[in-house]
Length: 243
Image (cartoon, one colour):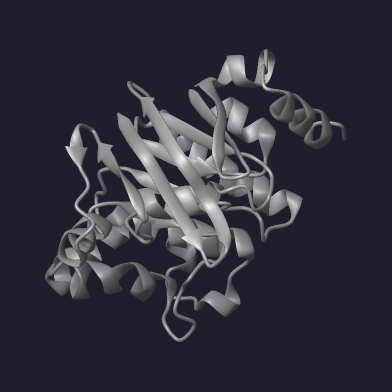
């Protein structure tokens, strides 16, 4: 996968969320985005996902410039799988119905075809026993796994994860992180914002450190974690890896 950003800027009122982000990343499969809270990680991720439009700059994904017109962004959003920290499941629908809904209503599949796709995915990822349960009957880890299956059911070009375990307890966190690592091992392209540094180091082959709205360091994950150069990254890792 390749990602090219040129002079990306985004401001919310007086707050500069991103300041002149210029970055080229090529030949990665899994990209980790790390940094302190409020540093710009989620804003950058939402721009890549086509959910937020920058005031300045350009973005290309796999050599294709992203058109920020609403029609083009709608098509872009439909081509990628996005998973947020809030599971965003409809509480009145079963797990199976939550995954089927976008296949039928957004992507235009026939109900029978959607059922077959969802059934196969639930079997493959050990969710078949929970297919007829509503979100309120599922654990947090199970809900997030359903949300991930919903994201991959559309056969996306790549997957985006925004703090996918922040609402989970440690046991459920491990369950979901194992699930994401399994997707990586299958060869799927991933972009992940996470506060879990061990996971970021293990799963991502490239890593970007963002603070104060700027990319301060990036490179192979082994280098970013094993030999950090920027003082803010050194201090950040010292704090988050202390315990």
